[in-house]
Length: 325
Image (cartoon, rainbow, N blue to C red; front, side, top):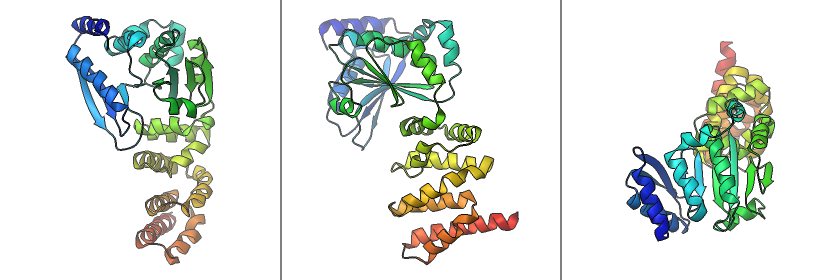
């Protein structure tokens, strides 16, 4: 941080109305030390900023979170101004948008994951960041990740990034160079829900929107392909959210779950015992008599006691349901 940047932060902090909260997520990644140093300096220069520090054991990238905005970047140089503004004046960002775009943003039903790759030397990146921050400030349905492609080169390589700025939407659409926010918003509104990525659905589940995911699938009459994968996700919180959505679909339209049963059976053999138990629980919630022979084979098979117990509970759930009706 240069002396000029320190002065800018101090002056900005003096005009800041009330305390502002940000979150610093640290992981095993050693690049988190630079994020920690930046946030420490920020807190010292502006005591009105309160930082919640969260440590994760997983080997994910460190980040600074401001609501629905994540910085996998250290916002210095030309990126400092938009960073400070989104902390202190998010409503100001939203007010700059044309009313036509605001109206479209209010109609978004499915969460949208936007990534923008930047580099510190890029003269056009701050403008792109400003445009996307305005969208994210206007609706929580847009989750924005700002990524320094030079600092996190492995993320850039994974997303096949060769220029900055580059914007990605749900890992399906991309724009490089100057962006048109109206075009991005139109695509967000007109996406096919069947094409939603695992990341998009996982984000909704993490935000406690399992019921909304279920209702979207019931409304469309289809189980989203990416959703099925979340039912056997290695991370328990994501798997739990998917299971809640599954239970909701079972209540509203159990016939839809027939699309899921073959997929779960395919994954059962390779799953660990914990996930096997969760799959068997879902079988029970499906209330499908078609899975009874499979459950009985598991009870008689060479599985551990916990898996067999889960199979017996699923059998009891299905048989009790059909005896009742």
